[in-house]
Length: 99
Image 1 (tube, rainbow, N blue to C red):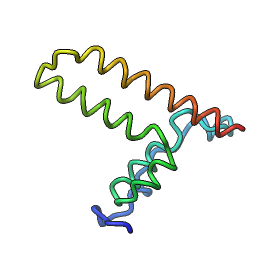
Image 2 (image 1 turned 60 degrees about the vertical axis):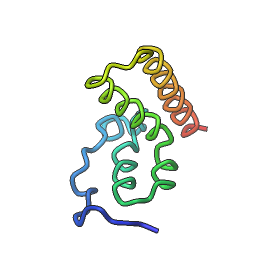
Image 3 (image 1 turned 30 degrees about the horizontal axis):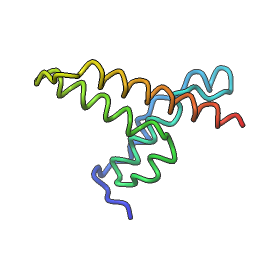
Image 4 (image 1 turned 135 degrees about the horizontal axis):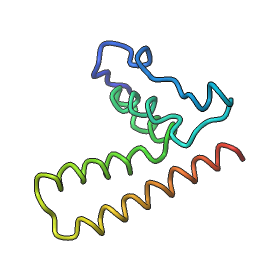
């Protein structure tokens, strides 16, 4: 079930992937804009299927934002773990696209 948060269609405002336009090959970030659009529409499973690293990235950037205002004791370790998790998910998804 989709719960539209925005009344306009966000796909009209998405930036095209220059790597895909020039070389015809997806880049590791292809799908992140559509995934965010699906989250705003309330389709959380579809967002994960579109770009599996989306939730790890949102958690990473959210944690960095919170840490900016409230200093957390083990922030460096948490940011490192979230960053590695995000990179592994991005690369795994990128390799999976070519298989």
